[in-house]
Image (cartoon, rainbow, N blue to C red; front, side):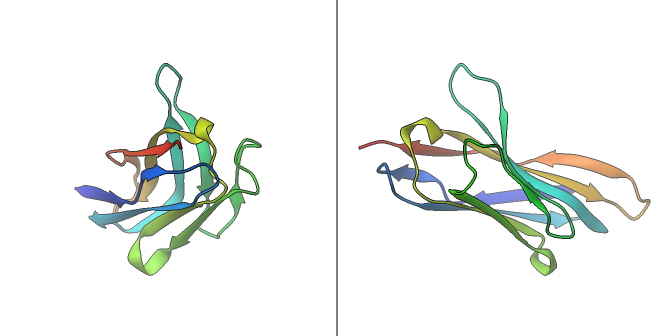
Length: 120
């Protein structure tokens, strides 16, 4: 079994910053891709940022230059630093982690989601 525990999120004014984190624990042999997704009311879940085990990152244009994803491999934790936040960034943010178990099976896990609200 694997658990994902997230923290961060909340209410921030436009132009402000927030940092999200998501820590994985349990039966983990290794972790491949880690990422963040978000879902706004009435919209589909969309990719925000991903990072490979080697540290390669990818972002959609909507957040490029404002958001930074990073990971701490010994701590099995992924972070999302969000700067210059805009009202359109308001959504529930979910971490997504691909975990390899001792049998080398890969399973995708989702965090419980954390609300980010950007409003004055």
